[in-house]
Length: 371
Image (tube, rainbow, N blue to C red):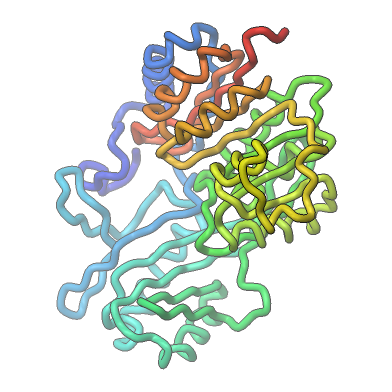
């Protein structure tokens, strides 16, 4: 990693050339999952630098000075003035934003962190404060205008957006299988931080859909990152997510992309399982005929905790599972249960975070008694 902070900053820790990192991580995954899959792992590499489109930094005050910080290799705070792994727009904005905040004592006072989100043509800075900020509204508006960015300022119980707009969401485009999809999402939404690898991940998931697919059930759908492109391979899609904001964005995204065969429901996975089993009735499902769906595939993209026991047992009743995992440890735990009735037909490694030990995996599971 060509970064002057590499030996101190604890974010990037792998020092070998990037292609060697990929080989070592692929071998590690192959060894870890050899009980479930012995075929060739499909590998999707990142750009070595400039790949992160979402990044968060601390801000540290030292007298009149203000610096970006990261956790160091030994846990200590490290002052940084650059971060080569972030997207070019974020990289270029970082010093300019810092100088603008440093030059205004009111903006600088009790600020402790900043998060950046970059999309095709937009960039947002989320400023975090330990103080009341309502009286700084005009200053945030002026700063957003001067830097031509969107700003969200947050403090406990307060949130300000600048510049004023009817739509505070960011807009992002993904190119999947030759088609461009447009997404809107809020600053608090979960997004994949490596956009190029995300495109590869969604494309791979789409390629896992078997011929003759019927309907798809998706759990943990977010704002529709996987849902929209995969809907092209199915008659109908039922997708669930617990976040109210993400479900609202997902509905907007179906309209933006002219997609009419997806039904998004704000429910957690266990609630949906209760509904599908007929254990409970939910007002949120009054307009949804669950009996009309014939699910041939289930798509899972859970948080780092992986699947709950109830979800693991429930999805065993379906024939095809596409599982995207951000945590190999919980993926291995879940496969130890699922592979009682499924086999792993394909296994992919997505290197979302170059120069780190992190590994994102994709697993295509088929029912053992199916061809």
